[in-house]
Amino acid sequence: MASASSQAYEVIKAEIISGRFPPGHRLVESDLTVLCDVSRTPVREALRRLVSEGLAEFSPNYGAQVADLAGEDLEALYELRTLIEGYAARRAATRISAAQIAELEALADRMEHLAGQPSVVPEEASANSRFHRIIVEAAKSSRLVSASNLVVEAPLVLRTIEHYSLEERARSMQHHRELIAAFKARDSQWAESVMISHIKAAFAAISRELSNRKTA
Amino acid sequence: MASASSQAYEVIKAEIISGRFPPGHRLVESDLTVLCDVSRTPVREALRRLVSEGLAEFSPNYGAQVADLAGEDLEALYELRTLIEGYAARRAATRISAAQIAELEALADRMEHLAGQPSVVPEEASANSRFHRIIVEAAKSSRLVSASNLVVEAPLVLRTIEHYSLEERARSMQHHRELIAAFKARDSQWAESVMISHIKAAFAAISRELSNRKTA
DNA sequence: TAATAATTTATTGTATACGATTATGCCGGG
DNA sequence: CCCGGCATAATCGTATACAATAAATTATTA
Image (cartoon, rainbow over all chains, first blue to last red; front, side):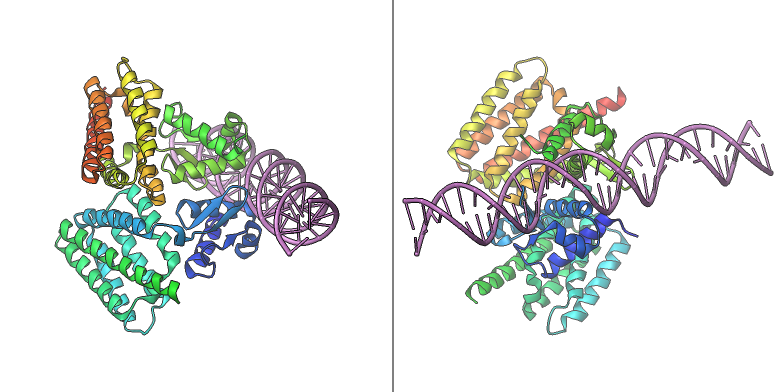
């Protein structure tokens, strides 16, 4: 059985990413104890971890709340993400294993299959997360993993992938395929460049979606 | 009075950075309670935070120990640091305030004064940390602060600055002055480039020092 | 004597109780 | 009617007690 602390972490994180806990939602410890079925101590540890990963914010003597990226400079966040994930792709190109490439291809297959559906299902989003995670791990730099968590996990609270247009989803699939090609060619520059395009495209979609939300 | 949790954090961090807790040293919670004069709960919180910042490592049912960079790929760590701090300097160039530039100059004065001394004193090291911190904050990107902590704080456990040669210290001072000049000129490219040089030079010094340690 | 099992000890993991702090709503005065 | 202070409730911060786990030691047997 998983530890109470990690269990609480997973449960709360799932609530946040699914959107059941919306941005700004106050994370009251005593409420979370009943949700996670553990005591306050592991709940607190889970909250501190979520804060350190940028999924929640914290104020002394007030507690944690779900991170609200509305007030944050999204362009800066995505610039940083471009930098970090681009670097990850660059390193991965010369270090990724055949098994990892095979897994990327399986995930790309799966996503393309799901991309035919009218709306983005959770499985498509999680496959996408896994795809990125494999690349970061293939870069073989422990700090890079932590750094990328900081900029990759946080934007998930926006759940913008659910609103991708068909064209945007198709382009995203294309990027995945091209990344795999770059890895097979062991071409660092190519891999980095595709990854940067991939993230810039995501930012464009997010900007559009967010301006729509405001006017709606 | 500061909270027990942050007090524990400061005390333990100081022990680690000063080297009184060497890399690999096991951080036993009950020992730390007497050192920090708080109970185990805030000690645990402090430890988790140190782990999230890369200053300590953690194993389940075993506890935390001071991070040991010996097993880590230092070149990768410094590459990432170059990326992140270079980006910070680039952004800071167009965003830094006059007051912040003034503080950088005061710190540079102080460090140059201390650099005349035969050995590096703690104050010189802390002034250097503060110098870098101001630049990262001037970049005005909240995630960037967390990301830079990850790559800036961790190498402090090596305490290599104490072994800088006179030439290396002089070059470091020169970099500080040139960074200030680049900021005054609001030149992003210049600032980034000097910062990259600054970190590459630090890495060279560290590599030399570490190979010396091995053979000694 | 060496290997293995049982026991003890040390340490972490979790729960809960109490105290401190802050937000909230009510009441009275301006 | 609005504003400020007071009482109350809600929540976090910390301490401590107990349970679970892993390491170390000792005892036992081949």
